[in-house]
Length: 336
Image (cartoon, rainbow, N blue to C red; front, side, top):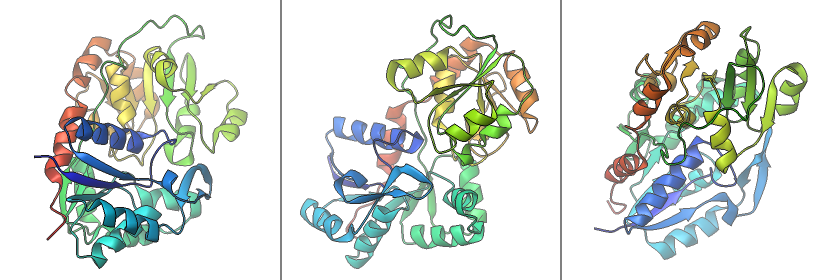
């Protein structure tokens, strides 16, 4: 059975992050299976830069055009991926037309807004309960996130939508092109306050710290930590080469709901050091592939002792095919 599926997301290219990666791979897999996907994304609308994060574009005055797109497409399934302007507009459309829909919880929105604008976390979760409340199902990546949302008053049916890794792209490679003193401790991702990079860059550890990525904190952190190597934004083969050239992947974030880059590192044969928080505790379920500790310096030290082959073998269990199958099985008929 092939279906017409509407997928609405405020997170989309040219953004490079775990949310976009998940959506791109899931929708590509659905199309390859013969389903007709209608993507509604910010690049189809007039946008403005997100305050404090200009590389993220927010759609303006989007309800009319979005409504027309959905009227013409007549979707059999509707998924609203994000809580931004497009997500709010799609929610309004579904409620107005008495259509059932699913949503997903990708990021700790309330915590991000608190970090950036000092809006109380409780206000953020009030908005999130309002946004997701009418959804038939809310898709979450991990069991710990599910428990956390239940504790915060989510009464929806919470269902699993895991993540995957491209094993043909991320794999162990030659490390010799990096000539700085080893061990190489590396972070890959957004250089932004919610990633807690100061905790990593402040560590007293041997070797060289590498930061691969771009974001609003880049210039500030480059000035404060001149001994670190800031590579900037990378994609494609250069990204995979740098990741595989590390000796340990350091993930200091306390606000990620999963952390797809953890899988990328493991598939590249790189052990992980992180805090024991939502995301890492769900991905790093074996102490043979990573070390989780509130003492991040100890986690780095211990992770350097781990075996590359164990990391790679662990990552093989994650695939985008399994991720897409979970997503598809979670969808509900739009017509109630």
